Amino acid sequence: MVKSEKVKTGHNVIDITTGEIIMELCEGDRIVTKQQDEHVAEYITNFNKTVPFVKVYLCDCNELYEELTGTEVITISTLINYISYNDNILRINDKPMKITDIADIIHRDYTNVKKLVASLEKKDVIKKIKWFDEKCNKEMNCIAVNPYLFFRGRDIKRGIVELFKDSKWSKVSYKKG
Figure 1 (cartoon, helix red, strand yellow):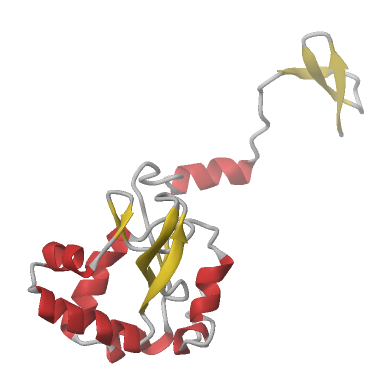
Figure 2: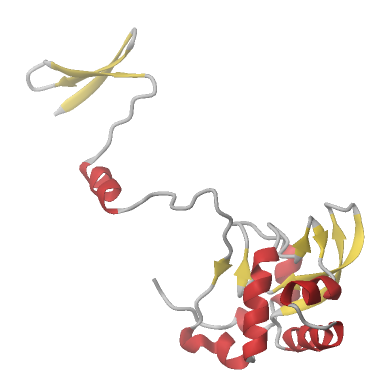
């Protein structure tokens, strides 16, 4: 059995059956288990750590993609790049996106994009809302993305979740691991 005792420079690891000092652990040293070594050998940890990402939930039977048109799928797939952290608001240059911004990004005319946004809103994928925007420090018209489908980060504003809590997507079953 191994026992650790503190000494001036760190900790001695002692085999308590023999009393022999096996090694010294200094501040900042770590004990790595065999399982950790095996994990590191098999996996790349923190892959693409510096690249932004968006969580996309995997619905059983691809319900979302069955409900959306091809143009809507392409549009939402493009727009997930603009979801902001914590509030799921679509932003460009830290400002809430407008329909004209979306039209520019997806290379469509304003009238068609307005209809496209209305269709995505009807399907509870997005919502046009008035929201106090902390980045701009005022209430603004914004487009929020349903966090039951996509979101960026780990935490989300309760108010955004509340907006979508009754959407069909909040009740969808998701694939397990």
